[in-house]
Amino acid sequence: MKKILLSVGILAVVGAIVVGATGAFYGDTETSTGNTFTAGSIELKVDSESYYNGMVCTEDGWQPSNNEEFGEVVGFPIQGTNCDGTWEETDLEGGVHTFFNFLDLKPGDHGENTISLHVYDNDAWGQFVIDGIIDRDNSCTDPEDAEDAENGNCSNPNGDGEIDDYLLFTGWLDQGRTPGFQNVDADGNLIDRDDNSENGIQLVDSLEGNNIYDSEYEGVPFWYEENIGNLTHELSDVLSAAYDYYCLDYENVSADGHNDYGLCQGLAFDGRMVGSTTYYFGLAWDFPLESGNDAQTDEYTADMTFKVEQFRNNPNPF
Ligand SMILES: [Ca+2]
Ligand SMILES: [Ca+2]
Ligand SMILES: [Ca+2]
Ligand SMILES: [Ca+2]
Image 1 (cartoon, helix red, strand yellow):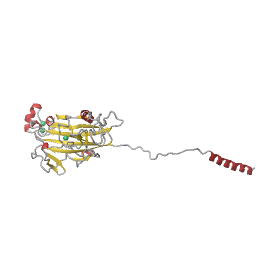
Image 2 (tube, helix red, strand yellow):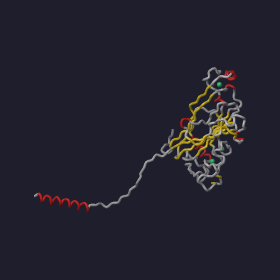
Image 3 (cartoon, rainbow, N blue to C red):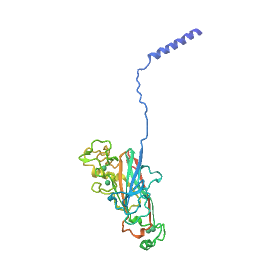
Image 4 (cartoon, rainbow, N blue to C red):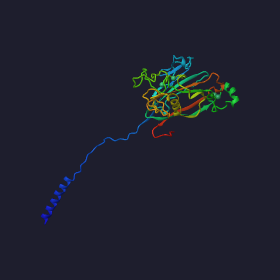
């Protein structure tokens, strides 16, 4: 009995093997390897170049700009003295840089910063915020005391200062002669292009990011000699207005601002910032000669913040 059972067992095993061999499925295998979800990045970097009374801020301190567009050199700031309004592309973490840091202004002083923004490497919405304002008399000089009497006198160093009522700011999109941002390199060459004109317009653009408001080409400033206080400014307003003004008449210009660093690169119908484009914004300031004594020693300090948010899937940013 035991032997028979054993035989059945062997048969069963053999049978099983046979079934296995005949029952193999036809099939095929295709493998897609390395499926990955990697988050893209939105990173904002900022650089700045600063001018003050005909001098330019360099790593060797203030130096004559040798360009009359920035005004006459008047002996202040003193050549070689420290300055901190110029820096290469960087993060502004921890408030490492100030665009404006002028501690001994006199009526007649004026200056300019060109601020460039680079979003790496996806499209993004941009926003500019001024807040954290300190606006105070700081100390009360005799002439200030006399003049300030009309406006409530300067008896308290923490009282509301007047300098902000005199300082005038002008801001513009420093896009130069050719609409949009061609981002010509330091040697004056176009980036990744062989053709140097489109629609008869030169793409090499020496007026882009030159710190000068070239009124013939750069449109209406978004601020013109204005006092500036707390504000939140959507960069899309400025950029979409530039698109509407400059880019609608050209054929072969993409409405999303991706134009291979040619005409209208960086200017999109919706005012997004186009990834890996360098945007230049000029910001000029003037402390007019006619400013009153009530602004003596006054302090006006503010934080300037640039924000970006992803463009994709984000129709209502900020
Ligand atoms: Ca004062
Ligand atoms: Ca340009
Ligand atoms: Ca310019
Ligand atoms: Ca004052």
